[in-house]
Length: 266
Image (tube, rainbow, N blue to C red; front, side, top):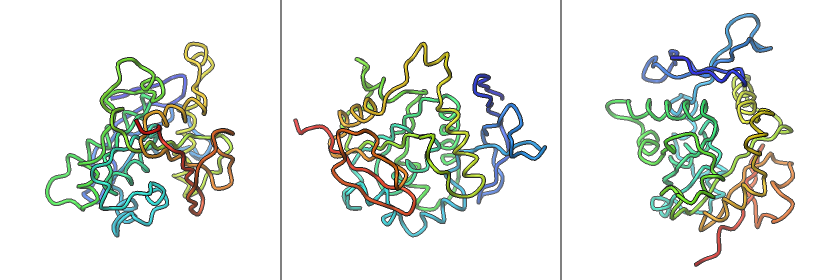
């Protein structure tokens, strides 16, 4: 199966992907043209993977110490009944952390190629048979993806509101910015670079559907969340918008989470 987006130079193809349970067929994002760092060979695919050894090791002893989880301000005993929207899911890693922490998480992703990668990752989690690590059990129970590529802001503005937008406690935003430093291993930098390219609208798209502004994104999130909105930012970057200002923040080593209030109590 090949699904391509010729205007953005990427295609989806099936590939074999290593997991702790052996190689599994997965959906990979491949560049149509060679990338500058491919050194003459075929570029490695980008695969959304919630079952990697790295992720399972990260969550093996719990996620309560993760900066994102601390920023929610919710005790572990209270998370089970709370609903979270990840409005800009991307590669889904932060949504997965929230799900493992016990929140019921719904992901929105507007790019069709990234949406397909997320759906494939969830499929592979559900297909694991037998005893699974607790983290994967929680992830399988708590993480879902809106059924088709969906822009969160325009879905929130729609008169036909999806049930996913009702009774939401927290909304999480991780907008991509051109001036962000790319941290981590080479493959992480590669995946983040591709993510930015997919989220960058072409001139033709901008003519038909104007890009959503940061102010619109934050306002839509605040209109839905009853508790708070969390916005991920590079550690020394400015706030998402000049006004309103966040009411607080929680800092990690390379990123911080700005905290905004949700909608007023009704």
